[in-house]
Structure formats: structure tokens, C-alpha cells
Amino acid sequence: MKELLIGILKDKENRDRLVFEFQEQVLNSKEENEILDDLAYDLEYYVQNEEHRKEVPQYFGNEKLEELILQALKDLEAAGQ
Image (tube, rainbow, N blue to C red; front, top):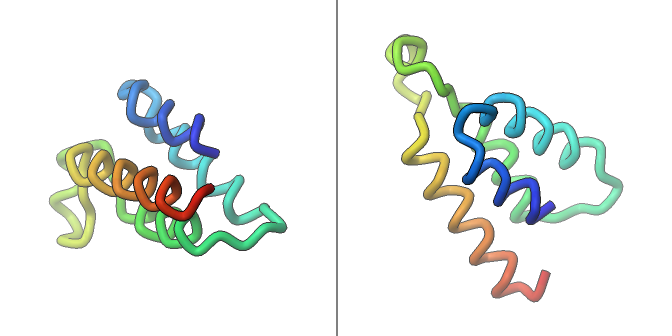
């Protein structure tokens, strides 16, 4: 799962698809992981298109996406995962 998160950080052109893949994997996983579950939920508000983000105040873009993923990766590392 970490590899997919790193891929999201690196591949800016395909972020929408990669975020969706990450969320699907987390939702379909039989393992419960609070860090990944929380991140998948938070990423529901990620919208790459700036014009679409203006429609809903809770939507966020690339900067917040990167912050959330980096924090999740740090949390996973700290938890020994």
C-alpha cells in the first residue's frame, strides 16, 4: 500500500485514478488499518480540478493531498507498518 501512496505523490498526471485505486484497495481489504482507513476517507475530498474545487469548500487539491499522504506514511512508519 505504501508503494501506491508513493506513486500518487510521484505521478501527478494520474492522481485521480491512483487515489481511486488506493481507496478501492483500502475499502476491499480484509485487514483493518486505522491510518489507511482515515486517509481513504479524507481523500474523498480530493479534487484535482481547481474549478471543481471551488464548488464545495471541503474539497482540496494537490498541496493538501501531499500533506495527508506524507503524514500517513510517517504514521505508518511510526506504527511499524
